[in-house]
Length: 358
Ligand SMILES: Cc1cc2nc3c(=O)[nH]c(=O)nc-3n(C[C@H](O)[C@H](O)[C@H](O)COP(=O)(O)O)c2cc1C
Image 1 (cartoon, rainbow, N blue to C red):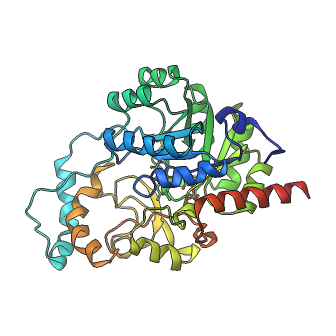
Image 2: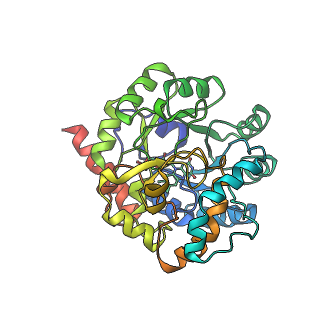
Image 3: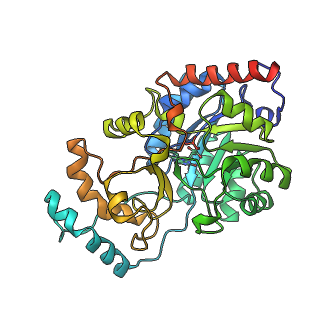
């Protein structure tokens, strides 16, 4: 398939279609990356919740299935928080009634939630495994680590949720900017501010970032079908990154409760919440979000808030109950359709191209 009006991302990343599969930690692995890459888009492997050996295994599966295709390895690059036992204790206290209700041991030590930032170990993985693309969430790693990533020849992407963040990423070594609108599912990539009132919707964000930076722009947030792709290109993006729509594909690793919520929730039923990890992320409203409010001052800093929820989830997840589990989703969830990711990718691209040519 050719004749895309803007070839900047296609040429930069070596892909045939201007569609990037969003890396979705916990929800996607090599099966999704293989499906999207097979269609001609960019497959991604989120590494934030994987060990080094797991990353190696996933990459090997991808390389075997898709020889010669580029791959995006995705990392979080947050600053690990300073210990704050008082805040941890206040948060756990706020959950005490739930512990009693589900029969979890309130006095047992609180488990630690695991979302590793990009570090020496991650950098060694990149140096050894040589992904063609490395993307970061929450800004960029320290300059020395970033230089080593760039020295491998990998193209570097990161998300901007404001024009200021896009300018910062351009000045600090990114090769393309993911403009992540407010509609997007999962964690906000925000890193210069933690003020959620600063967050801009995709339709306003994409053209303003495209005007402000020289780098190519990838639109993300609320894009679920060919209409979103056509609109994003019209707004100045060179490609799109799609997350939520891929959660409906059989390659996604979502729990039955999450799948049920995705299948039934109306578009008006998502919110930004910090309850599950400590950072704002968009998910479908559930019981704990309704009862505590989706944003809480009590939640410990990312990624620690999830620890005190683990004993609750250990009981309720097993019952197929999502009262205390994150149900990440963007606002465009009702555009989701159940079809294999390769087919979905091809269909979005071919319908968009047909519409552009009219
Ligand atoms: C379940 C889920 C998990 C996500 N995990 C990550 C992640 O690990 N790394 C990342 O860079 N972005 C992550 N995101 C954000 C996506 O990369 C992307 O920006 C977003 O899904 C685009 O908006 P959409 O969901 O409306 O398509 C996640 C999104 C979802 C829905």
